[in-house]
Length: 543
Image 1 (tube, rainbow, N blue to C red):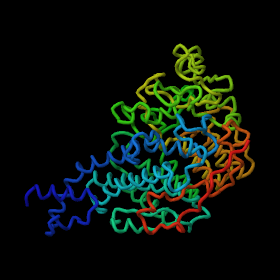
Image 2 (image 1 turned 60 degrees about the vertical axis):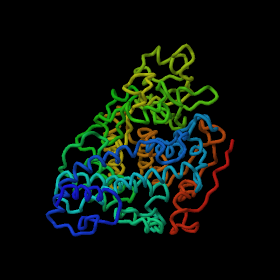
Image 3 (image 1 turned 90 degrees about the vertical axis):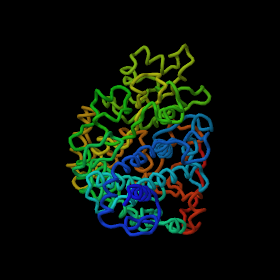
Image 4 (image 1 turned 180 degrees about the vertical axis):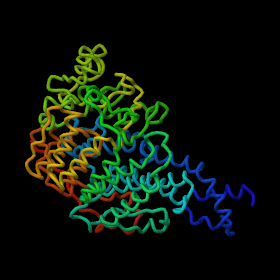
Protein backbone atom coordinates (compact mmCIF):
# COMPACT_ATOMS: atom_id res chain seq x y z
CA UNK A 1 0.00 0.00 0.00
CA UNK A 2 1.37 3.42 -0.89
CA UNK A 3 2.54 5.67 1.92
CA UNK A 4 0.31 8.52 0.77
CA UNK A 5 -2.70 6.37 1.55
CA UNK A 6 -1.47 5.92 5.09
CA UNK A 7 -0.94 9.66 5.42
CA UNK A 8 -4.46 10.27 4.17
CA UNK A 9 -5.81 7.89 6.77
CA UNK A 10 -3.63 9.40 9.48
CA UNK A 11 -4.96 12.85 8.70
CA UNK A 12 -8.51 11.60 8.72
CA UNK A 13 -8.15 10.18 12.21
CA UNK A 14 -7.30 13.61 13.59
CA UNK A 15 -10.65 15.21 12.82
CA UNK A 16 -14.13 14.42 14.04
CA UNK A 17 -15.51 12.35 11.19
CA UNK A 18 -17.40 9.11 10.87
CA UNK A 19 -14.53 6.93 9.63
CA UNK A 20 -12.42 4.72 11.88
CA UNK A 21 -9.20 2.75 11.74
CA UNK A 22 -10.93 -0.18 10.06
CA UNK A 23 -11.70 1.74 6.85
CA UNK A 24 -9.82 3.95 4.44
CA UNK A 25 -11.61 7.18 3.57
CA UNK A 26 -12.49 5.61 0.21
CA UNK A 27 -14.24 2.78 2.02
CA UNK A 28 -11.89 -0.18 1.52
CA UNK A 29 -10.95 -2.34 4.50
CA UNK A 30 -7.65 -1.93 6.33
CA UNK A 31 -5.76 -4.95 7.61
CA UNK A 32 -4.53 -5.22 11.20
CA UNK A 33 -0.93 -4.84 10.05
CA UNK A 34 -1.85 -1.68 8.18
CA UNK A 35 -3.63 -0.32 11.26
CA UNK A 36 -0.55 -1.02 13.35
CA UNK A 37 1.59 0.92 10.88
CA UNK A 38 -0.82 3.85 11.07
CA UNK A 39 -0.73 3.81 14.86
CA UNK A 40 3.07 3.94 14.72
CA UNK A 41 2.81 7.18 12.77
CA UNK A 42 0.43 8.79 15.27
CA UNK A 43 2.72 9.96 18.10
CA UNK A 44 4.52 12.65 16.09
CA UNK A 45 1.25 13.81 14.54
CA UNK A 46 -0.63 13.97 17.82
CA UNK A 47 2.17 15.64 19.74
CA UNK A 48 1.48 18.80 17.76
CA UNK A 49 -2.24 18.50 18.52
CA UNK A 50 -1.41 18.36 22.21
CA UNK A 51 -0.18 21.93 21.99
CA UNK A 52 -3.83 22.83 21.55
CA UNK A 53 -4.55 21.53 25.04
CA UNK A 54 -2.01 24.04 26.35
CA UNK A 55 -2.66 27.04 24.12
CA UNK A 56 -6.42 26.54 24.35
CA UNK A 57 -6.33 27.68 27.96
CA UNK A 58 -4.65 30.98 27.12
CA UNK A 59 -5.85 32.48 23.86
CA UNK A 60 -7.75 35.49 22.55
CA UNK A 61 -10.65 36.20 20.17
CA UNK A 62 -11.17 32.57 19.21
CA UNK A 63 -14.04 32.25 21.68
CA UNK A 64 -15.86 35.50 21.02
CA UNK A 65 -16.20 37.35 17.74
CA UNK A 66 -15.48 40.82 19.08
CA UNK A 67 -11.79 41.60 18.70
CA UNK A 68 -12.24 44.57 21.02
CA UNK A 69 -13.39 42.44 23.95
CA UNK A 70 -10.37 42.56 26.21
CA UNK A 71 -11.68 40.14 28.82
CA UNK A 72 -11.21 37.24 26.38
CA UNK A 73 -7.82 35.87 27.40
CA UNK A 74 -8.53 32.27 28.27
CA UNK A 75 -8.69 30.45 31.57
CA UNK A 76 -7.08 33.21 33.70
CA UNK A 77 -10.02 35.40 32.62
CA UNK A 78 -12.38 32.68 33.85
CA UNK A 79 -10.52 32.76 37.16
CA UNK A 80 -11.09 36.50 37.35
CA UNK A 81 -14.81 35.96 36.75
CA UNK A 82 -15.04 33.41 39.57
CA UNK A 83 -13.04 35.62 41.92
CA UNK A 84 -14.98 38.83 41.32
CA UNK A 85 -18.28 36.98 41.76
CA UNK A 86 -17.43 36.22 45.38
CA UNK A 87 -16.58 38.38 48.37
CA UNK A 88 -12.80 38.54 48.54
CA UNK A 89 -11.53 40.26 45.37
CA UNK A 90 -12.86 43.60 44.21
CA UNK A 91 -12.20 46.65 42.10
CA UNK A 92 -13.26 50.07 43.37
CA UNK A 93 -14.37 51.17 39.93
CA UNK A 94 -17.81 49.59 39.47
CA UNK A 95 -18.53 51.25 36.14
CA UNK A 96 -17.64 50.09 32.65
CA UNK A 97 -14.13 51.14 31.71
CA UNK A 98 -10.75 49.72 32.60
CA UNK A 99 -12.48 47.27 34.92
CA UNK A 100 -13.27 44.65 32.29
CA UNK A 101 -14.98 42.39 34.82
CA UNK A 102 -17.51 44.77 36.29
CA UNK A 103 -20.42 42.60 35.08
CA UNK A 104 -19.10 39.70 37.13
CA UNK A 105 -18.47 41.86 40.18
CA UNK A 106 -22.05 43.14 40.06
CA UNK A 107 -23.44 39.66 39.21
CA UNK A 108 -24.96 40.97 35.99
CA UNK A 109 -23.56 38.16 33.85
CA UNK A 110 -25.83 35.26 34.86
CA UNK A 111 -28.36 35.71 32.04
CA UNK A 112 -28.41 33.61 28.87
CA UNK A 113 -27.17 36.39 26.58
CA UNK A 114 -24.23 37.49 28.72
CA UNK A 115 -20.89 37.69 26.92
CA UNK A 116 -19.17 36.39 30.05
CA UNK A 117 -21.52 33.42 30.21
CA UNK A 118 -20.92 32.53 26.55
CA UNK A 119 -17.19 32.96 27.11
CA UNK A 120 -17.11 30.42 29.94
CA UNK A 121 -19.19 27.88 28.02
CA UNK A 122 -17.14 28.14 24.83
CA UNK A 123 -13.82 28.18 26.66
CA UNK A 124 -14.32 24.75 28.18
CA UNK A 125 -16.18 23.04 25.35
CA UNK A 126 -13.69 24.23 22.74
CA UNK A 127 -10.81 23.03 24.90
CA UNK A 128 -12.69 19.76 25.32
CA UNK A 129 -13.04 19.34 21.56
CA UNK A 130 -9.27 19.27 21.24
CA UNK A 131 -9.15 16.52 23.86
CA UNK A 132 -11.91 14.58 22.11
CA UNK A 133 -10.14 14.84 18.75
CA UNK A 134 -7.05 13.28 20.32
CA UNK A 135 -9.09 10.56 22.02
CA UNK A 136 -10.82 9.76 18.75
CA UNK A 137 -7.44 9.22 17.11
CA UNK A 138 -5.82 7.07 19.80
CA UNK A 139 -7.24 3.58 20.40
CA UNK A 140 -8.08 2.78 24.00
CA UNK A 141 -5.90 -0.32 23.72
CA UNK A 142 -2.86 1.51 22.32
CA UNK A 143 0.41 0.03 23.54
CA UNK A 144 2.81 2.68 22.25
CA UNK A 145 4.17 4.55 25.28
CA UNK A 146 3.79 7.97 23.69
CA UNK A 147 0.22 7.29 22.62
CA UNK A 148 -0.71 6.10 26.09
CA UNK A 149 0.73 9.29 27.55
CA UNK A 150 -1.12 11.48 25.05
CA UNK A 151 -4.39 9.68 25.66
CA UNK A 152 -3.94 10.11 29.40
CA UNK A 153 -3.30 13.83 29.00
CA UNK A 154 -6.39 14.23 26.82
CA UNK A 155 -8.56 12.37 29.32
CA UNK A 156 -7.33 14.49 32.22
CA UNK A 157 -7.88 17.65 30.16
CA UNK A 158 -11.46 16.65 29.46
CA UNK A 159 -12.02 15.89 33.13
CA UNK A 160 -10.68 19.34 34.02
CA UNK A 161 -13.14 20.96 31.61
CA UNK A 162 -16.10 19.03 33.01
CA UNK A 163 -15.06 19.79 36.58
CA UNK A 164 -15.05 23.50 35.77
CA UNK A 165 -18.32 23.35 33.83
CA UNK A 166 -20.30 21.42 36.43
CA UNK A 167 -19.34 23.90 39.16
CA UNK A 168 -20.22 26.85 36.93
CA UNK A 169 -23.65 25.68 35.79
CA UNK A 170 -25.01 23.81 38.80
CA UNK A 171 -24.87 23.83 42.58
CA UNK A 172 -22.37 21.60 44.33
CA UNK A 173 -22.40 17.81 44.12
CA UNK A 174 -23.55 16.92 47.64
CA UNK A 175 -27.30 17.37 47.83
CA UNK A 176 -27.71 17.98 44.09
CA UNK A 177 -26.66 14.66 42.60
CA UNK A 178 -29.82 14.30 40.49
CA UNK A 179 -29.99 17.94 39.35
CA UNK A 180 -29.35 18.89 35.73
CA UNK A 181 -25.67 19.31 34.98
CA UNK A 182 -24.16 19.95 31.55
CA UNK A 183 -24.29 18.01 28.26
CA UNK A 184 -21.74 15.24 27.91
CA UNK A 185 -19.73 15.50 24.70
CA UNK A 186 -17.40 12.58 24.07
CA UNK A 187 -15.14 11.55 21.22
CA UNK A 188 -17.98 9.34 19.98
CA UNK A 189 -20.62 12.11 19.96
CA UNK A 190 -21.81 12.85 16.43
CA UNK A 191 -22.70 16.24 15.00
CA UNK A 192 -26.34 15.18 14.94
CA UNK A 193 -26.21 14.19 18.60
CA UNK A 194 -24.66 17.54 19.49
CA UNK A 195 -27.81 19.26 18.24
CA UNK A 196 -30.03 17.21 20.55
CA UNK A 197 -27.87 16.66 23.61
CA UNK A 198 -29.67 16.98 26.96
CA UNK A 199 -28.08 18.01 30.23
CA UNK A 200 -26.64 15.01 32.03
CA UNK A 201 -27.27 14.80 35.76
CA UNK A 202 -24.66 16.04 38.20
CA UNK A 203 -23.98 12.43 39.16
CA UNK A 204 -23.47 11.43 35.52
CA UNK A 205 -21.04 14.28 34.93
CA UNK A 206 -18.98 13.36 37.98
CA UNK A 207 -19.01 9.71 36.94
CA UNK A 208 -17.51 10.76 33.61
CA UNK A 209 -14.93 12.92 35.38
CA UNK A 210 -13.86 10.06 37.61
CA UNK A 211 -13.80 7.53 34.78
CA UNK A 212 -11.58 9.83 32.72
CA UNK A 213 -9.24 10.54 35.62
CA UNK A 214 -8.98 6.90 36.66
CA UNK A 215 -7.91 5.93 33.15
CA UNK A 216 -5.64 8.97 32.86
CA UNK A 217 -3.79 8.03 36.05
CA UNK A 218 -3.29 4.49 34.79
CA UNK A 219 -1.95 5.71 31.46
CA UNK A 220 0.26 8.46 32.88
CA UNK A 221 1.85 6.36 35.61
CA UNK A 222 5.43 5.78 34.54
CA UNK A 223 5.12 8.04 31.49
CA UNK A 224 8.11 9.95 30.16
CA UNK A 225 8.92 13.34 31.63
CA UNK A 226 6.90 16.26 30.36
CA UNK A 227 8.47 19.10 28.39
CA UNK A 228 7.19 21.72 30.83
CA UNK A 229 4.54 22.19 33.48
CA UNK A 230 1.94 23.19 30.91
CA UNK A 231 1.67 19.48 30.12
CA UNK A 232 -0.38 17.19 32.30
CA UNK A 233 1.50 14.62 34.37
CA UNK A 234 0.20 11.87 36.61
CA UNK A 235 0.57 14.29 39.54
CA UNK A 236 -1.79 16.73 37.84
CA UNK A 237 -4.30 13.94 37.27
CA UNK A 238 -4.10 13.01 40.95
CA UNK A 239 -4.64 16.66 41.85
CA UNK A 240 -7.73 16.90 39.66
CA UNK A 241 -9.10 13.73 41.21
CA UNK A 242 -8.39 15.14 44.67
CA UNK A 243 -10.55 18.15 43.79
CA UNK A 244 -13.34 15.90 42.53
CA UNK A 245 -13.20 13.61 45.55
CA UNK A 246 -13.35 16.61 47.88
CA UNK A 247 -16.46 17.84 46.08
CA UNK A 248 -18.08 14.41 46.35
CA UNK A 249 -17.28 14.02 50.04
CA UNK A 250 -14.87 11.13 49.54
CA UNK A 251 -12.53 12.34 52.22
CA UNK A 252 -9.99 9.52 52.45
CA UNK A 253 -9.63 9.39 48.67
CA UNK A 254 -9.26 13.18 48.47
CA UNK A 255 -6.49 13.19 51.08
CA UNK A 256 -4.67 10.32 49.41
CA UNK A 257 -4.86 11.85 45.94
CA UNK A 258 -3.74 15.26 47.20
CA UNK A 259 -0.66 13.73 48.82
CA UNK A 260 0.18 11.90 45.59
CA UNK A 261 -0.28 15.12 43.64
CA UNK A 262 2.31 17.09 45.60
CA UNK A 263 4.61 14.11 46.19
CA UNK A 264 8.07 15.35 47.10
CA UNK A 265 7.41 18.93 45.96
CA UNK A 266 7.29 21.62 48.62
CA UNK A 267 5.26 24.82 48.97
CA UNK A 268 6.82 28.23 48.56
CA UNK A 269 8.86 29.11 51.64
CA UNK A 270 8.30 32.20 53.77
CA UNK A 271 11.30 33.78 52.05
CA UNK A 272 9.93 32.93 48.60
CA UNK A 273 6.63 34.72 49.19
CA UNK A 274 8.16 37.65 51.06
CA UNK A 275 8.29 39.46 47.74
CA UNK A 276 5.84 39.53 44.81
CA UNK A 277 5.88 36.15 43.08
CA UNK A 278 3.48 33.57 41.53
CA UNK A 279 4.61 34.15 37.96
CA UNK A 280 7.06 31.33 37.18
CA UNK A 281 5.87 27.80 36.38
CA UNK A 282 9.33 26.37 37.01
CA UNK A 283 8.97 27.10 40.73
CA UNK A 284 8.89 23.91 42.76
CA UNK A 285 5.50 24.76 44.28
CA UNK A 286 3.79 24.62 40.88
CA UNK A 287 2.31 21.28 39.85
CA UNK A 288 0.60 22.56 36.70
CA UNK A 289 0.48 25.93 34.99
CA UNK A 290 0.06 27.93 31.83
CA UNK A 291 3.53 28.68 30.46
CA UNK A 292 3.77 32.03 28.67
CA UNK A 293 6.58 33.50 26.57
CA UNK A 294 7.10 36.94 25.09
CA UNK A 295 6.31 35.42 21.69
CA UNK A 296 2.80 34.40 22.71
CA UNK A 297 0.05 36.44 21.12
CA UNK A 298 -1.55 37.49 24.39
CA UNK A 299 1.76 38.84 25.67
CA UNK A 300 2.23 40.76 22.44
CA UNK A 301 -1.16 42.45 22.79
CA UNK A 302 0.22 44.32 25.78
CA UNK A 303 -3.08 44.58 27.64
CA UNK A 304 -5.19 41.54 26.74
CA UNK A 305 -3.72 39.17 29.30
CA UNK A 306 -3.91 38.33 32.98
CA UNK A 307 -1.12 40.64 34.26
CA UNK A 308 -2.87 43.60 32.66
CA UNK A 309 -5.94 42.91 34.78
CA UNK A 310 -4.47 41.57 38.03
CA UNK A 311 -0.80 42.47 38.49
CA UNK A 312 -0.29 45.81 40.24
CA UNK A 313 3.38 45.99 39.27
CA UNK A 314 3.34 45.73 35.50
CA UNK A 315 4.43 48.48 33.16
CA UNK A 316 1.59 47.80 30.76
CA UNK A 317 -1.95 47.12 31.89
CA UNK A 318 -5.42 48.16 32.89
CA UNK A 319 -4.24 48.14 36.48
CA UNK A 320 -1.24 50.45 36.56
CA UNK A 321 -2.14 52.56 33.52
CA UNK A 322 -5.59 53.45 34.81
CA UNK A 323 -6.40 57.04 35.64
CA UNK A 324 -7.60 58.13 39.05
CA UNK A 325 -11.20 58.03 37.82
CA UNK A 326 -10.88 54.70 36.04
CA UNK A 327 -8.85 52.63 38.45
CA UNK A 328 -8.56 48.89 37.91
CA UNK A 329 -6.36 47.67 40.75
CA UNK A 330 -7.56 44.43 42.37
CA UNK A 331 -8.07 44.71 46.12
CA UNK A 332 -8.76 42.26 48.93
CA UNK A 333 -11.87 42.56 51.10
CA UNK A 334 -10.59 44.60 54.02
CA UNK A 335 -12.43 42.40 56.52
CA UNK A 336 -10.64 39.31 55.26
CA UNK A 337 -7.31 41.14 55.33
CA UNK A 338 -7.92 42.26 58.92
CA UNK A 339 -8.19 38.62 60.02
CA UNK A 340 -4.71 37.75 58.74
CA UNK A 341 -2.27 37.76 61.69
CA UNK A 342 0.63 40.20 61.63
CA UNK A 343 2.96 37.21 61.94
CA UNK A 344 1.65 35.72 58.69
CA UNK A 345 3.82 36.63 55.69
CA UNK A 346 0.72 36.70 53.49
CA UNK A 347 -0.59 39.86 55.13
CA UNK A 348 2.00 41.67 53.05
CA UNK A 349 0.50 40.38 49.80
CA UNK A 350 -1.70 43.48 50.04
CA UNK A 351 -0.83 47.02 51.07
CA UNK A 352 -2.32 48.41 54.26
CA UNK A 353 -4.34 51.61 54.71
CA UNK A 354 -1.10 53.61 54.43
CA UNK A 355 -0.25 51.83 51.15
CA UNK A 356 2.65 50.02 52.78
CA UNK A 357 3.62 46.37 52.44
CA UNK A 358 6.82 44.64 53.58
CA UNK A 359 6.46 42.35 50.56
CA UNK A 360 6.57 45.36 48.24
CA UNK A 361 9.51 46.78 50.20
CA UNK A 362 11.40 43.53 49.70
CA UNK A 363 10.65 43.51 46.00
CA UNK A 364 11.43 47.15 45.19
CA UNK A 365 13.30 48.53 48.15
CA UNK A 366 11.58 50.84 50.62
CA UNK A 367 12.04 54.07 48.66
CA UNK A 368 10.92 52.75 45.30
CA UNK A 369 8.08 50.83 46.95
CA UNK A 370 6.82 54.10 48.43
CA UNK A 371 7.07 55.88 45.10
CA UNK A 372 5.30 53.07 43.27
CA UNK A 373 2.42 52.68 45.73
CA UNK A 374 1.86 56.44 45.86
CA UNK A 375 1.88 56.95 42.10
CA UNK A 376 5.24 58.74 42.08
CA UNK A 377 7.45 56.17 40.39
CA UNK A 378 7.72 58.00 37.07
CA UNK A 379 7.52 61.69 37.98
CA UNK A 380 3.96 61.23 39.19
CA UNK A 381 2.66 60.01 35.83
CA UNK A 382 2.91 56.24 36.34
CA UNK A 383 1.57 54.13 37.87
CA UNK A 384 -1.73 55.28 39.32
CA UNK A 385 -1.71 55.61 43.09
CA UNK A 386 -2.68 52.45 44.95
CA UNK A 387 -5.86 52.22 46.97
CA UNK A 388 -5.69 50.63 50.43
CA UNK A 389 -5.64 46.82 50.24
CA UNK A 390 -4.31 46.70 46.66
CA UNK A 391 -2.65 43.37 45.96
CA UNK A 392 1.08 42.97 45.41
CA UNK A 393 0.87 39.18 45.49
CA UNK A 394 1.56 38.64 41.80
CA UNK A 395 4.96 39.73 40.58
CA UNK A 396 5.85 41.36 37.24
CA UNK A 397 7.46 39.46 34.39
CA UNK A 398 10.82 38.05 35.51
CA UNK A 399 10.41 40.03 38.72
CA UNK A 400 11.24 43.25 36.87
CA UNK A 401 9.01 46.08 38.06
CA UNK A 402 7.40 48.16 35.31
CA UNK A 403 8.29 45.48 32.76
CA UNK A 404 5.92 45.70 29.80
CA UNK A 405 6.22 42.15 28.44
CA UNK A 406 3.36 40.69 30.52
CA UNK A 407 4.61 37.17 29.82
CA UNK A 408 4.05 35.82 33.33
CA UNK A 409 2.97 32.20 33.72
CA UNK A 410 -0.36 31.36 35.36
CA UNK A 411 -0.79 28.78 38.16
CA UNK A 412 -3.34 26.04 37.50
CA UNK A 413 -2.41 23.85 40.47
CA UNK A 414 -0.03 24.46 43.35
CA UNK A 415 1.33 22.29 46.14
CA UNK A 416 -0.33 24.61 48.66
CA UNK A 417 -3.80 23.82 47.33
CA UNK A 418 -3.13 20.11 47.66
CA UNK A 419 -1.85 20.57 51.22
CA UNK A 420 -5.08 22.34 52.13
CA UNK A 421 -7.23 19.68 50.46
CA UNK A 422 -5.33 17.03 52.38
CA UNK A 423 -5.77 18.84 55.70
CA UNK A 424 -9.50 19.42 55.21
CA UNK A 425 -10.17 15.88 54.05
CA UNK A 426 -8.21 14.36 56.93
CA UNK A 427 -9.96 16.65 59.41
CA UNK A 428 -13.40 15.64 58.23
CA UNK A 429 -12.60 12.09 59.29
CA UNK A 430 -10.45 12.89 62.32
CA UNK A 431 -10.42 16.46 63.61
CA UNK A 432 -7.13 16.16 65.48
CA UNK A 433 -5.33 14.75 62.45
CA UNK A 434 -6.64 17.51 60.21
CA UNK A 435 -5.64 20.24 62.66
CA UNK A 436 -2.17 18.80 62.93
CA UNK A 437 -1.75 18.68 59.15
CA UNK A 438 -2.99 22.26 58.80
CA UNK A 439 -0.68 23.54 61.52
CA UNK A 440 2.30 21.79 59.93
CA UNK A 441 1.69 23.58 56.63
CA UNK A 442 0.94 27.07 57.95
CA UNK A 443 3.65 27.11 60.62
CA UNK A 444 6.41 25.93 58.31
CA UNK A 445 5.53 27.94 55.23
CA UNK A 446 3.46 31.01 56.19
CA UNK A 447 3.16 31.87 59.90
CA UNK A 448 5.52 30.34 62.49
CA UNK A 449 3.18 31.46 65.30
CA UNK A 450 0.09 29.77 63.89
CA UNK A 451 -2.17 27.55 65.99
CA UNK A 452 -5.46 26.10 64.80
CA UNK A 453 -7.90 26.81 67.62
CA UNK A 454 -10.95 25.19 66.01
CA UNK A 455 -12.87 23.22 68.63
CA UNK A 456 -15.41 21.64 66.29
CA UNK A 457 -15.52 20.22 62.80
CA UNK A 458 -17.52 23.18 61.50
CA UNK A 459 -15.00 25.60 62.96
CA UNK A 460 -12.15 23.61 61.44
CA UNK A 461 -13.77 23.63 57.98
CA UNK A 462 -14.19 27.39 58.28
CA UNK A 463 -10.53 27.71 59.25
CA UNK A 464 -9.37 25.74 56.21
CA UNK A 465 -11.65 27.89 54.08
CA UNK A 466 -10.03 31.00 55.55
CA UNK A 467 -6.60 29.62 54.67
CA UNK A 468 -7.79 28.90 51.13
CA UNK A 469 -9.27 32.39 50.77
CA UNK A 470 -5.92 33.92 51.69
CA UNK A 471 -3.51 31.48 50.04
CA UNK A 472 -5.38 31.04 46.76
CA UNK A 473 -6.68 34.61 46.47
CA UNK A 474 -7.03 35.65 42.84
CA UNK A 475 -6.43 32.17 41.42
CA UNK A 476 -10.01 31.22 40.58
CA UNK A 477 -11.30 29.25 43.57
CA UNK A 478 -13.46 31.83 45.37
CA UNK A 479 -16.91 31.16 43.90
CA UNK A 480 -16.48 27.40 43.77
CA UNK A 481 -15.48 27.28 47.45
CA UNK A 482 -18.57 29.31 48.36
CA UNK A 483 -20.72 26.83 46.45
CA UNK A 484 -18.97 23.72 47.76
CA UNK A 485 -19.21 24.83 51.38
CA UNK A 486 -22.72 26.26 50.93
CA UNK A 487 -21.76 29.69 52.23
CA UNK A 488 -23.49 33.04 51.69
CA UNK A 489 -21.85 35.96 49.92
CA UNK A 490 -21.31 38.84 52.36
CA UNK A 491 -20.10 42.20 51.09
CA UNK A 492 -21.70 44.74 53.41
CA UNK A 493 -19.37 46.49 55.82
CA UNK A 494 -16.39 45.92 53.54
CA UNK A 495 -14.63 48.14 51.01
CA UNK A 496 -16.81 47.33 48.02
CA UNK A 497 -18.03 50.28 45.92
CA UNK A 498 -21.70 51.13 46.31
CA UNK A 499 -22.96 49.50 43.11
CA UNK A 500 -21.26 46.23 44.07
CA UNK A 501 -22.43 46.18 47.70
CA UNK A 502 -25.43 43.94 48.28
CA UNK A 503 -27.38 42.57 51.19
CA UNK A 504 -26.25 39.08 52.14
CA UNK A 505 -26.80 36.61 49.30
CA UNK A 506 -28.07 33.38 50.81
CA UNK A 507 -26.17 30.13 50.40
CA UNK A 508 -27.04 28.35 47.15
CA UNK A 509 -29.07 31.30 45.86
CA UNK A 510 -29.91 30.86 42.15
CA UNK A 511 -27.81 33.92 41.26
CA UNK A 512 -24.66 32.08 42.33
CA UNK A 513 -24.66 29.82 39.26
CA UNK A 514 -24.93 30.52 35.56
CA UNK A 515 -27.76 29.62 33.22
CA UNK A 516 -26.98 27.58 30.11
CA UNK A 517 -26.20 30.34 27.58
CA UNK A 518 -28.17 31.12 24.47
CA UNK A 519 -25.08 30.19 22.48
CA UNK A 520 -25.92 26.57 23.40
CA UNK A 521 -29.69 26.56 23.68
CA UNK A 522 -30.08 28.10 20.22
CA UNK A 523 -28.37 25.09 18.60
CA UNK A 524 -29.25 22.30 21.05
CA UNK A 525 -32.94 21.41 20.91
CA UNK A 526 -32.67 19.19 24.00
CA UNK A 527 -32.19 22.18 26.32
CA UNK A 528 -35.38 24.20 26.50
CA UNK A 529 -36.24 27.06 28.84
CA UNK A 530 -37.78 24.50 31.19
CA UNK A 531 -34.51 22.56 31.23
CA UNK A 532 -32.41 25.60 32.12
CA UNK A 533 -31.47 26.83 35.57
CA UNK A 534 -33.98 29.24 37.13
CA UNK A 535 -33.62 32.85 36.07
CA UNK A 536 -32.38 35.10 38.86
CA UNK A 537 -32.36 38.86 39.11
CA UNK A 538 -29.07 40.53 39.91
CA UNK A 539 -29.05 41.77 43.51
CA UNK A 540 -29.92 45.39 44.22
CA UNK A 541 -27.10 47.53 45.66
CA UNK A 542 -27.51 48.70 49.25
CA UNK A 543 -25.72 51.30 51.31
